[in-house]
Image 1: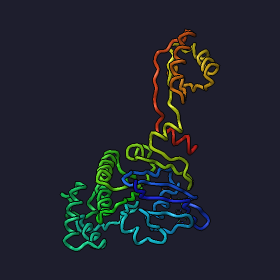
Image 2 (image 1 turned 90 degrees about the horizontal axis):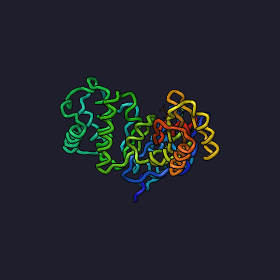
Image 3 (image 1 turned 30 degrees about the vertical axis):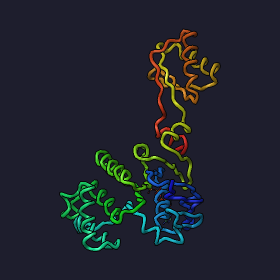
Image 4 (image 1 turned 90 degrees about the vertical axis):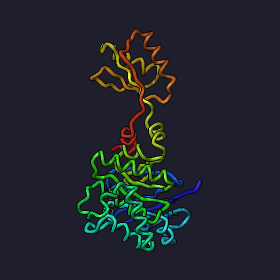
Length: 309
Ligand SMILES: Nc1ncnc2c1ncn2[C@@H]1O[C@H](COP(=O)(O)OP(=O)(O)OP(=O)(O)O)[C@@H](O)[C@H]1O
């Protein structure tokens, strides 16, 4: 497997503030990798270092084997970047923006035009090709931003909060576009504050908080290792609650959380086979259940658990 991005203990110190405090991570070619974290966690700074926009204070980063600090020219040739602030010119049309960026990226006139037409098609912007960007909706602008970053067919695309500020429908459309990109062979590193976005899109997620990497894995791994399966038991009679709680503690050594409104006990269980034993014990103690369910924790629950926010 080819490694697209490798960072070792990468760090960014600003005057009086360390924004990234030694992060090591590996992104494989073809992956969608999400950097998830709250406002100010250091996501944009990390991405700016990897895309050569800001220097690395210490540690190292390699993009497809090229050292970001010492070989930034080679890195720039293989990456595309869509930042939080649009790089496009509002007074120009979509097609003009694309061809200008094509020329800036070293394409000749004919190729730049052909690539522009192709990208407008790919991002469903053909009908708006000759309209000025100031008439575009937020979603259309984001799509064009993304199209612009793909002009030179980069092997690796960085997306800084690609859907922040978009309405849910437009966000969904952006997700489809992003998935298609990866299906065409690109590797993608995106930052997001939205758990759902990371869950929906990413093969791997790194959660960062206050400049530090606090958890990493596939969405399912994060859910499984950081918060176990939840077993929820609704009792038929609320009078049984104290007995049920003491049985759970004495026999299984677990602490059940009470969800009072539905007479429901919620149990985090690592060992799912213990659930059958628990049901048998309830039956023997004549504690009747109205219903029970098993569910995975949401990424929100994982996030709360690891960040303590
Ligand atoms: N040029 C700078 N000089 C000083 N501090 C900075 C600079 N850029 C960022 N910071 C600080 O570094 C921290 C991380 O910022 P960064 O923009 O990387 O966070 P983020 O996770 O991308 O947040 P957001 O989601 O708000 O973009 C913040 O506390 C920010 O104020």
